[in-house]
Amino acid sequence: MNHPILVVDDDPAIRDAVRDVLEMEGLPVETAADGSEALVKITARAPRLVLLDMRMPGLDGWGFARELRAAGIELPVVVMTAAADARRWAEEIGAVAVMAKPFGVGELMDVVRTYGR
Image (cartoon, rainbow, N blue to C red; front, side, top):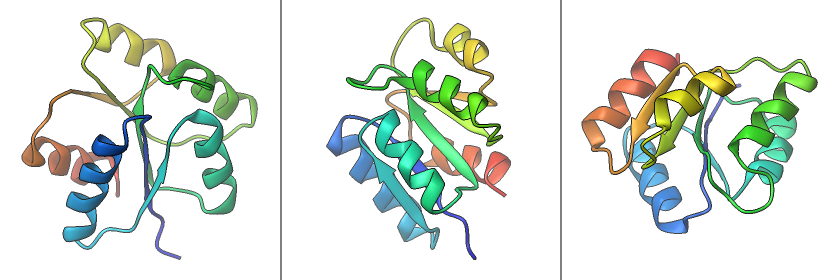
């Protein structure tokens, strides 16, 4: 099975833009609007990489990471955020990298090539 990249963001414009870029590159993609939906998607079809917004209503990035660890699921997570504290937040949840919003297509693809194999 070709494992998708899971894009988790409460902003539909960002979710759709990231999905569109990745799909144009021929990559399978799943999307989720918050951490709870993301956990359901992971259970249904394990992703190769999670692109995760941190500040979301419902289950936020920290809660999502906590639930993953509690379930014993290890996946590479890249934090996507515009926050000044992005690096610290990424360290708090054990993320492999950070993409500061707004990020470009080149940066997105570099991250996917590096961590999504």
